[in-house]
Image 1 (spheres, chains in turn orange, brown):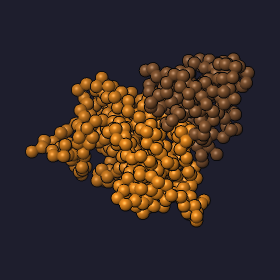
Image 2 (cartoon, chains in turn purple, cyan; image 1 turned 60 degrees about the vertical axis):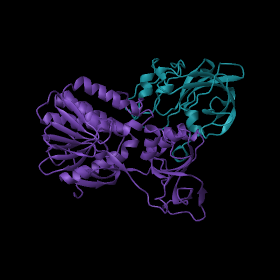
Image 3 (cartoon, one colour; image 1 turned 30 degrees about the vertical axis):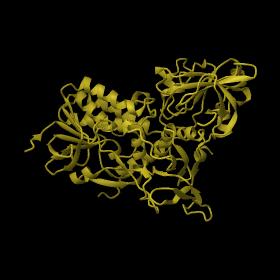
Image 4 (cartoon, one colour; image 1 turned 180 degrees about the vertical axis):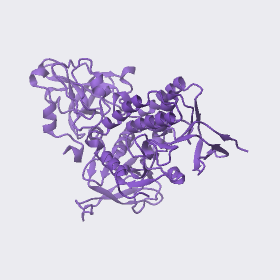
Amino acid sequence: MTSLQKPEIAIVGGGPAGLSAALSAVRQGAEVMLIDRDPALGGQLVKQTHMFFGSKKEYAAIRGIDIPGQLMFALEEDGKGKFSPILNTTVLGYYDDGVILAEKEEEQAVLIKPQKTIIATGAAEKMLPFPGNDLPGVYGAGAVQTLMNVYGIKPGTRVLMIGAGNIGLIVSYQLMQAGVEVAAIIEGAPKIGGYLVHATKIRRAGIPIKTSHTIKEAYGNKSVEGALICSLDENWCAVPGSDLDMKVDVICLAVGLTPQTELLWQAGCQQKYIPELGGYVPLRSEKMQTSLPDLYVAGDVACIEEAGSAMVEGKIAGLFAAADLGYDEKVEERYHGFSRELEELRAGPTGAKIRQGLSRLNGGAEVC
Amino acid sequence: MLEKTGVPEPEQVKKITPSEERFQKGPVAVVECFQNIPCDPCRYACRQGAIKEFEDINDLPVIDHELCNGCGLCISECPGLAIFVIDATYGKEEGLIKLPYEYLPLPGQEEEVTGIDTEGQAVCGARVVKVQNTKALDRTPVVTLAVPRQHLMRVRSFVRKGGE
């Protein structure tokens, strides 16, 4: 029989948000169990070889791959005896009585009944429908990044990148660094979505960025041999005669992320469809508390955003999950600092979409 | 247009270009950051106080070229790799560009390379004068190129001859 474990706080997901939540909660004095499906903590950080943007206070100019180590160091220092990570363990279900069911190393069931739970499960990549999108050689950008930066495997020799958001731009840069040719980056929108300094870095390496362009089809016998692309008019309709044939063996999709909210649906949290935040996202207070008082959220599961904001959200969720258990030293003061940081990160023009989405989330539209 | 192409417009570059007078005084940093994004490491990198304090983390960096001594500490601190140091006083015909370069293999000292512009187009021949890759640079090596003076504000990267 599997025994029921009863930590004060359980955190699902050990990416930037989950790790920051853990650190914040143990610093308040709470006991934290962190569950992650991967063999190492860090979530998507383990493949982010580029320097992060953001606030110097919040790991800017530090490479993503170096952040988990710094957070783990702090967790070991500040969380002695209070922090227990459980790796290689996938959370499968959240039950009505607050019990979490997880599977460890694909064979052992783990049952956990925490007093508070923080869901920091992150996001999944979106797919794009086009003929041939099931051919081997069509990858999600996350997969390409994992192959290259975690396992040291080149995905192919010549890549067409779909999407000029930050992920499309960064993964293109990392492909070049790995010695893989990037034929072009195409983007359906009339403007580059990612940070322009990333775009400039790529352009000076000679890679074209074609805005108002989309993929019509991928072709090839057994795997991708090429792609047909075309340009789009202002109504997003294909411009006749604008087809271009590109010989590539990899098509990499970087067309956005969607929050991984399955556990929140199971738990019965109220959620709302907010396109600006990436899809269905949980309603939550500024404490990052969902409609269920024992359930908190942080990071991309709550709103598709940068890792910097995910980390601050994690700190807020960890702080209040701990405070609700009575570990409430300097809560107001600390919250004030964190919320100001978050506000600053979202204050500029690149945060406009997030601000709009959050205001819609907190507004009166219908709730599911 | 920068937002469409990823290539800064000449007017944008002109606005952030130090004066000819300042160029004559020695090395100076050129900050090619044209979008308000939440990012501030450059201001903490500068020990001369040349990069002004941000009121808002989304502010564009404002650099006082008179206070900048061209030390180059900011180059590898910029996550956008958008800072370059230009020394127009290096030689009669040639000036120096210090630029961030995160590709392997690194060029050798004295290697002849091709200087390229913000569109990746060849501009001129260039010579590698120095390659810095210390621990403090944290895997963003800084390469110093000697290029003809008239191309100092055009060359922003390079390709090695015979391939990458």
